[in-house]
Length: 514
Image (spheres, rainbow, N blue to C red):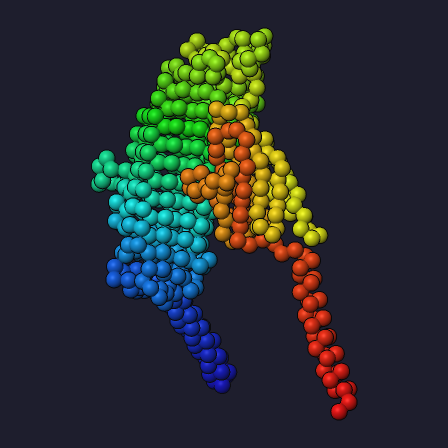
């Protein structure tokens, strides 16, 4: 019995010791992992003197271009002007904490952030406090609360970025403690924004004189919002689709004198949403397949002309006191309404009877045919034995698309009625054309961000070109094109033939009599 009791006691002690050691081991492992995580979240500074502290994964040979050499988990503060931060395709990732920022600029000038994948921050890139002439381009933002924010800063450019699965999209506003100073004269162009829980693009708190052009916002809760006291902004050439429970473009709370033109809005709860906003000009837009084409709440004195309202469940919905202007007089005309049932006896393209919305809203000169409704068209380009599909979406007639492999050139014609604005979106497979691009309209070089925008989604390049309508030739040149299949065959053939010739020559030389 004594031996048995001692044996049992030892066994119990051994089991208890095992669990204690196991617990200590697990505690040590988790402690190490926790220390690793804390150390992994680096606090990085690009200092005013050009040095970098906090990481070895950012290098610079000239104190002007700072390049990632690997993925980084951490936060970057920029204190040096006139530099380029090139992510080189690597990821900058946050720890998911509140109030953390991926790249922070305060009072900075001429800083470019490019080619970086920015993930899991409260704010991905924050341009703050009188920062100007900075550029954020060709980055990818995923799973951020605010992927890109401009606060109290002007004359910055945000272009050709991809934003997907973030809470918000691109945000411009002021900040607490800065009074009436907001974010003005910024350019937002050529960005692709999808799966935002809130707005794809939003201006708030007096952000004025900004240009939002050529962006694609698809499958977001809301499209583009021009918020309180945001005046004199230009919103043009944007494509907004699948905001089924939200709006395509909203102007609210005393947003005045904004120019909204050439946008394409589809499948929205509200194509345009006006909430206490007046004196805005809305022209040459297409609102298609939405629940309401336009909604008003206390928003008088806006002017609509040369817009197409097509197959919306209700073209216009007015809640309170919103008497607006719906035409540009005769012979310019008003808008096209797909449910207009009037006639055109004299054939001038304008209906003989007004399109009556309510007692205070009438289109006196409704158009009989839609102006420049965008049409999607596909063209096949064959190189060797491979077919490549080039797609255009345009309110012009697109024709005569030609690909010249030798000149690395794609050409097409666009035609439309004089006196109107044309646009053409050209989608080109990267397997066909890639590298650096230049565009020409009738042999005149176009300026990116002014005459056209360029974006890349990983497989295709998208070019959005705008112009005054007539007949034009658009030429697209690239530095790289797909090689001809026959040339690939010729190279090994040439190598084989050369090798065979050398071997034959050696053999003949060996057989030559002395």
